[in-house]
Image 1: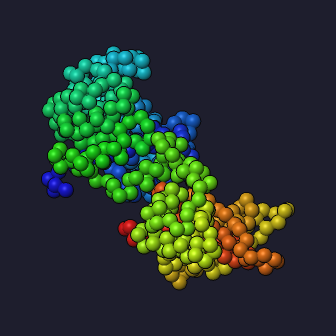
Image 2 (image 1 turned 180 degrees about the horizontal axis):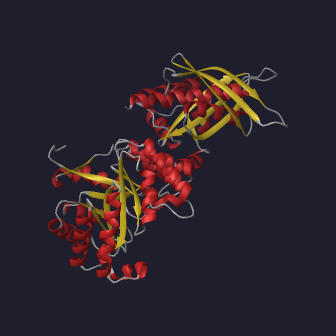
Image 3 (image 1 turned 45 degrees about the horizontal axis):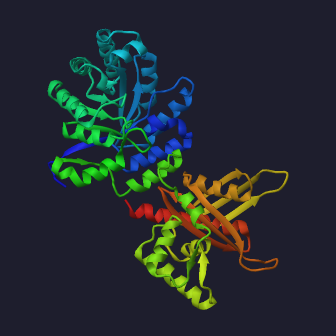
Length: 470
């Protein structure tokens, strides 16, 4: 990478634009993932009147858990709204208030019932008030591409004079071609000194990525991106800059190694699937069989089809187990569920961070099931106590209480290995973390014990990956 390359900041708008599709817990999960890949700015959207308490709680929580990135809340010409936004994010490491006001004639008259000239003091006063609270202030010029260029420059100068350090051009209507957006950015770059220039592109014509690249070439410093539909794609931009960044003299600061898995997970949460999700692939693949004499490439492809990304060593272990099974039993093929069990038993094996010490389950048809779980983490005993919808759910919740984190349960199966009253139960669990699957297997004469051991086995694999990716 060129040490002199101009660093382009990624301002992710997934939460702002897709918030209605997420639960509170999912929003937090998306925020954590954005923080892990190194997004520079996270756009949180405005605090709604109907969900004010929930929004404020989310933003305060985000301020506490995210470091190293800027948290931006969208505000309008409303002092009460600005105060509420600032109260929610003032504890963040880098808080930003994003003043979003229209600059086109049609938007100014429709939203604020004012002529464009009358909007200039509104822009100045709103930016100045936001700045007086101590925030970094961005002026998002809504509908920039449908206003007179001289007026856009005048509005930007007014915002900059009032304290805005970032001016963002918004192609709200989505009617501009890439070269037209590049020309606007170039004009602002030359006319308004001392500010960063941002760009927010609509994908109404499928040109958002091209427009963003044109804006970057023209001097844009920040690009608003999304992991859902509607704007420039951070994945596509990262791929383009990986190829052309050297020639353009620009670079990104995000962790591209985690980008694909993050995109898959965010897409899965939002339901915005451009292709098959992992779950749909599993469903389509469940009826197929894998030959026990399959070559190692086929084994790797079969594992990938049900969601696993195996290392070369793990792929070799699964391949050897598959062939041994065929030779020992005479079977010609196995199902994908059986392949899943082989992967859980033979692949991704790690030294355990957590060990199950004890579990106590209370359950019955007249009481709520509760579970008390004690785990040993490197010599430290940790105990969780939780109620749940049945003993196994309570047990998993108790483990999550110990961890302080919820992992998505992708699959859970119990089967009997032996027969009779003392039958051995075999539990298989698949947990999903950052788009990747981790399987665990547990054996016990007690199905609850087998399930807990399987969960802890999968958990240890996640922790191992976390520790080795830092």
